[in-house]
Length: 73
Image 1 (tube, rainbow, N blue to C red):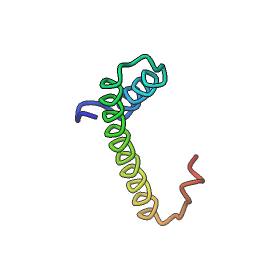
Image 2 (tube, rainbow, N blue to C red):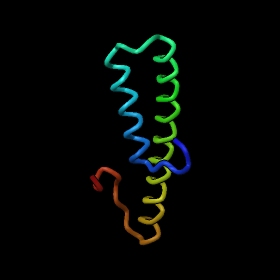
Image 3 (cartoon, helix red, strand yellow):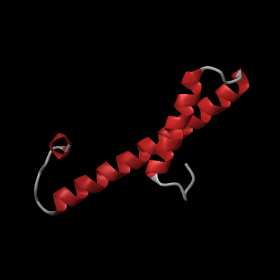
Image 4 (cartoon, rainbow, N blue to C red):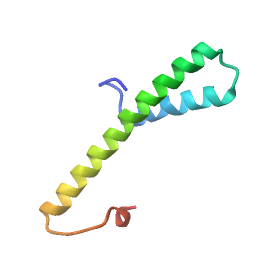
């Protein structure tokens, strides 16, 4: 995920990669390349989500309330 790509754009890119691989009509070398891109992108998206969660926890602690992450969704 490039610095200019938003989380949502990165997710769309990852979904496109998964869809392409699920289709099965991708040459092996291209499939391996796409798989590697997808794995890297997945890790970056996970990191972004973890950072967002940390930020939420800090905000909640700063205001004195204690909410479980499950209560947010």
